[in-house]
Structures are given as C-alpha cells and as structure tokens.
Length: 211
Image 1 (cartoon, rainbow, N blue to C red):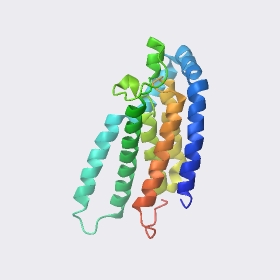
Image 2: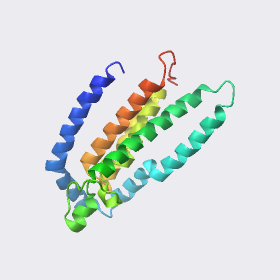
Image 3: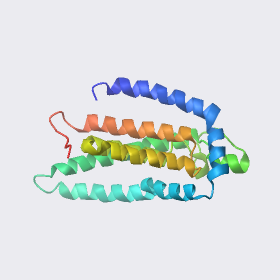
C-alpha cells in the first residue's frame, strides 16, 4: 500500500502493453480457437454458470440492498465496525463499475460476436449498444474489485477470493463474450480500484480483521 501510486503507474503501463499486444497480435486467434473448439460444449455451459458469479443485475441488487442496510445501521449507536467494511466493499465495486462503463462507452470495442457474424474487429468509439462495449470486461472488473476488497478485509482467504475472480475472467473468454485483453483490462481496473478505495477510505488507526 505504501507504493500504490508507483504500482498503479507501473502496472498500468504493463497492462497497456499487454493489452496492445493481445489486441493486435493474439486476441482474434484465441477467440476464434475457443469458438471453433468449445462453442456449445460442456466447457461453455460450465463457463456460463461461472460467469453468473459476476452478473451485473446480481451485483446491482446486492449493492442496493447493502447500501440500504448501511444507511439503517448508521442510526444504531455505535455503528458496528463490519458496516464500515461493507461500505468499503460496496464503494470499491461501485467505483470500478463507473470507471469500467466509462471506458466501455468511450472505446466502443466490437465484441467477439461481431467478429464471427460481421468480421468486425477493433474500436468504434462511443459505442452504446451491447455489441460495442466489449472492453473492459464488466464481469471481470466486478469480480476483481469484489475479490480484492474482500482480500483486504479477510486477508486469510485472499487466495480463494482471487482464484474465483480469475475463474470468472477466464470464463468470459470461454463463452466468447470477451477477448483476453478485455479481461486483462477489467482485472487491472478492479484490482486498483479496490486498493485505492481502501487507502482513501480507512484511517491508519483502523485495523482490518484477518479472521
């Protein structure tokens, strides 16, 4: 956490380089291979179920219920400490979603389905339809922001949380809804949103539980 500014820049540059390499050299080959070899198979079905772990509507419902609960708890004196943790987690996810949606609509990247159906690949810029908001992967950024926020609160289980987020990211490629670069970009946003929110949200004297 001490070097979060430097790490944000360094890993941001690394993410950009990886994204561009995937975008120009590998994305189309990988997604075409997945489509030709796994479409309609058990792998796709399993991946679709895994993807449900970061469904947008599910997260929005969870965030709404959590924010309502947090507001109610503010009237309880003293407010339980876990409510602060819950607020931190909700803010991390919400900020990640806002940032991700901004990039989605600004870049307007064609989803893989456009490659398969219309041989369209690349960026259209300012894309508002589902077919034109491939990058970053929304499922991935939600999963990683949630996983890393939970990891900051429950450090003992961080590898479990992060492993689940990785599975969700991979599943987005296996169901051919996203390119690998979309997943990499989404993971970066989710991770550093959770880290920055933690740094700005908690005072130094607040200790995070490791149980």
